[in-house]
Image (tube, rainbow, N blue to C red):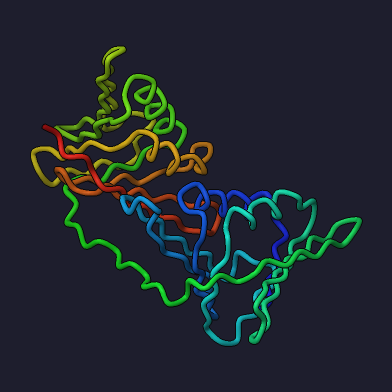
Length: 247
């Protein structure tokens, strides 16, 4: 397997989006691209990543294979890149080579982890009752505002309104964004309402890598996991987060 990445900034953001949730992960490399799906250590969230081969300037994967690495270490190395990144993994190697090319050439090697036997989690089959596509900057600000007051916040879709609520010892907050506002490009509601409570820290981590006016799709069902989807250039990210059931 041999990969080259020219847009270092974007590649770092993609890895950050996963490393925000998990420390170690197993990639599945195939001729179509790279995939990763993993639960976090607390088992309440799942991240799903797909980077198509078109996202790389060079992509040579003749045979499908899996490999596991420490994502925090990978992120540190990518953070040192000033130019192109080359990733090389021989079939019989116990280490993955990461070469940073600029004025100087630097070659790092990370050991492969023995995680390949762990089962890849299945994507939850949830009949969502609401789908809201909202600008990432808008959603991130709403989550941060709510997180100032409470460790758990409520995401709610009803009528033509997407609301976020927070209630804590230091105060309360309720925000409402209406269908048709500049922030919301899609609003689909299949039930009277869809409402669930989630840890604000996790929502903040999940949306952290989304930037600018790129859209985030939020899918809700009463007291069920939320699905949050967005893209970073050609890479597709999908997260599931388990709810806290309200008293």
